[in-house]
Each structure stands twice: as structure tokens, then as C-alpha cells.
Image (cartoon, rainbow, N blue to C red; front, side, top):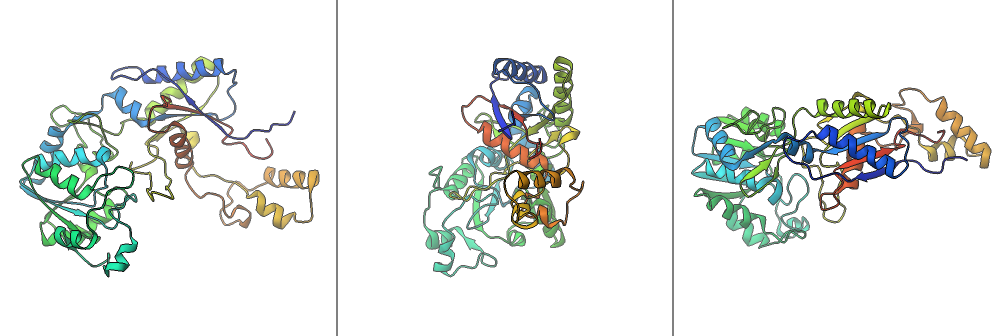
Length: 396
């Protein structure tokens, strides 16, 4: 009988992962138990995704706010810094800000407006037109911001992040001055020592500030990029990708993710005789149309994956073929013509109109996003995702 199913993604339940456990062995056992329970056979290029959270937890990749404070103090060697372009997040940034505040006597906190880098809005962007504010040039102090935009609560969290961040800094015995601007160089009117907290634009921000004559400019990937007081660390992204673990600790992005993915691949091969592809995934790369939040608060979707997941899709657009090349065909004749076209497609379809409209993204970004949507971030208890049929096409 002809197959009627394409891509299938399944959440796989595992035990609660603790520090020091052999996660690769746990993943292998959990997946094999699921396959046996659901009577599923391993197919060609099946994919196992493991959320970065459990990888970091098994590694014990944690740090305290004191570790953050000690690293910030040592690397800046001053008592007043500008902290610019942070995202609005209790989970992602607030605890990092505590560590920064503990290291300083004063922080000038510069927030982008009307939203942060990943789409969390301080206020409705339509108010900019109503109030006659140009976000590209205007620098607002806190008093002017309140006069114009008042006290707005985040629609999902119910938090006024301006007030929340200011009180958090002050609770550490640190003076907090808040300004609102979208030009990085605006911070230099307040201090020449700057910590860039943007994620995907950080190197451009750093380059602009250095060119403008700043004394010391660091990015979050340069904080905890090596152990401090015996802490965890991440040599690739430092504090970026971290999450709140407790009130005093953060869980950092996992290290050596490629080696871990390859370990799972080898254990699956040894146990089943079948080769699967494996990736570690964090936040997916997609945007919420209502809340306007771009999910990707991690520096990358996948920090590590097996070699078979490198590259981008090489696909033909079926509706293009049906509406153009084979517009005069239908039924089995159309099906066979399209199938033949797929079988004969070039290995690189860049520039081919028949591939126009297919998603031009890295496979790991697409598959990692699918994993993130499937596992969620709450209480599903499925930190492992098993995907079948992702690399199939109409002819399989």
C-alpha cells in the first residue's frame, strides 16, 4: 500500500535528568523503549533531537550570580558600566543583571524601544506616531519615557520591565539609571565602559562602540566564557543562552554538543544497527504573530549536531510544477510527471524558479524549530524528540 504519511515528530518521555548522569545512554534507552512500545521501525535518516536544557543539566554547567559578578568586575575594572540592549525576560536576563549589578556601584541601563531584540514590546509601537517620537534618533530618560508612554505591563507576563529591572539593580546596592535609545553610541554620553547584551547583533554593536572610542566594550559571550571560582562556563557563547536555574544560579548553554550528538548516534548504532542523525536544540527560530515575540533568545538554534544534518533543503515546489510546467496534466499523469521531475532534480537548486518559495534556512534551524515546538517549554516531560520522514519527498 502507498504511504500516506510524511514527516512525523514524537515527543519521547525520559526520566528527570540529574547532573553527572550518562545522558547519551538515557536518551538511547528512552528512544529504544519508545520504538518498541509504539512498534516503530527506524527509517532512513530518522532524527533524534535533545533539548539543550538537559544536556547542560547533565554536564552540571551552572554558575552563580557571584560568579557573574566576579567575572564582570575583573574584566571591566571600574564601578560604572552601561548595560545595553538586554531582552526583557525574568528567566533569561534578570538573574544575569543581578550579577552585573553586584559588581558595580552604578549601571546605566539602556533599553531599546518600543521592543527588545526578540520582539517583547515595552509599549504599542503605534504610540510612537501618536507621540511624535523618532525611535531612530530620540534618546529618552526615564522621566520622559513615563510622561510619553506611562506604565505598561507586558501582555503575557504582566510585568513592567522598566520598574522590574530598576528595582532589581537597586536591590543589589547599585545605582540604576535607565535610558531608552536604539543607537548604540548613545550610551557613550553616560559611560565609556559597556556590556552589550544583544544576542544576534552583538558584534556589530561592539564594533560600532569601539570605533566611536569606547574604553572597554564586552559582549555577554565574553562573560563566563571560562570558569570563574570553579563555575560552569561556555567558551563559545558565555552567558548567552543561559536560563535561570534558582534564585542565585543560572544554567549555561551546554558545551561540547557536537561530541554529545555523535555519542548518541554511536550508541544508537551499537544498540539497533541503524544510523540516525542527532542534534541538540535550543529555542526555535519562529515568531509569534500575536505577541510579536521572536522565539530565538539562544545564540543559535542548534549548538551541536551530526554531520548528516549540515546544509540546507534542496526541494522543488510542487505547486509551482503543477501550475506551470505541468499545468495541462492531472491525475496519475500529473503525479508521475512531478515524481519524475523530483527524481531528476539537480543537487543544487539555487536560482531555479521551481524551488522558489521553499524555505531557505539551515536544516538544523528548521528541524530544531520543529523539535522546540513539539517539546514545548513546560510540563510535557519530553526533552527528546524523534522525527521520521523529514528527508522524504513525494516519490518515497
